[in-house]
Amino acid sequence: MITPAQWQKSSFSGGGEGNDCVELAATSAKVHLRESDTPTTTLTTTPAPVTHLLQAIRIGTFPQHP
Image 1 (tube, rainbow, N blue to C red):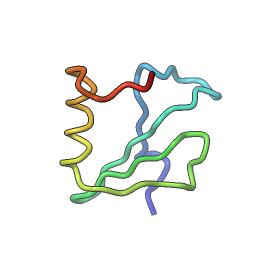
Image 2: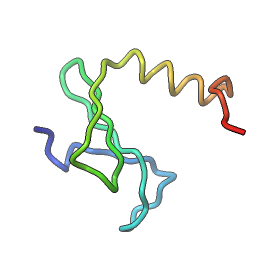
Image 3: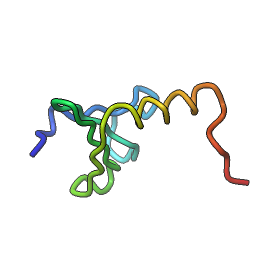
């Protein structure tokens, strides 16, 4: 299990309680994601899909919901 000290959240989310956001933790060859308001539910993947997602968000090619 990943310890809470390893979880990181975006600097854009603020630092206080109640600032729900996606948190990320990395272990050997895996990336773990969770929503801060439901920390017991996690998604585990490899770095490549997360890298592609972040690149798409940065350059604006990630689909937006109307």
